[in-house]
Image (tube, rainbow, N blue to C red; front, side):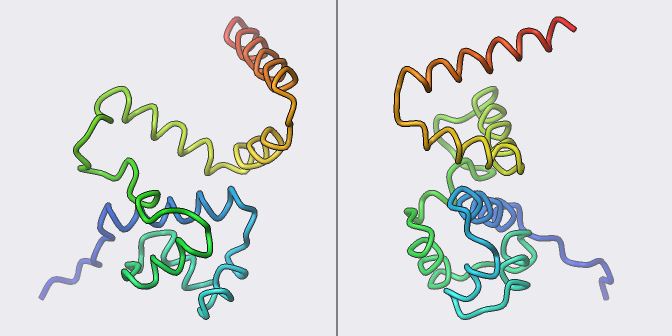
Length: 137
């Protein structure tokens, strides 16, 4: 008998991380998502970690609550064939990691509230300048 704990499937981990990403982008708590689905926040945590697999009907409900197409949860999934390979795949992972961070979520929420395109451009220029200064130090 094999005593090794079963490891989550990489696709389940990816789908869970995309659920967490979308939930954070919208500012919805695990508790609120769980309530909307009729499950506990602990179950939401297990989905987001990939510990528990999300069934098709549950994923459809999550997509509806989070106002995202089902395909959103599979974008950039491991082993996905398509245009994202090599450096593009690495870049997508970097962006997803940033958007899953607390700072990334906060920055994204604040930035999308800026409606003036000129102000948005100035904020982007400021961030680029700060990044260039940080690289020199």
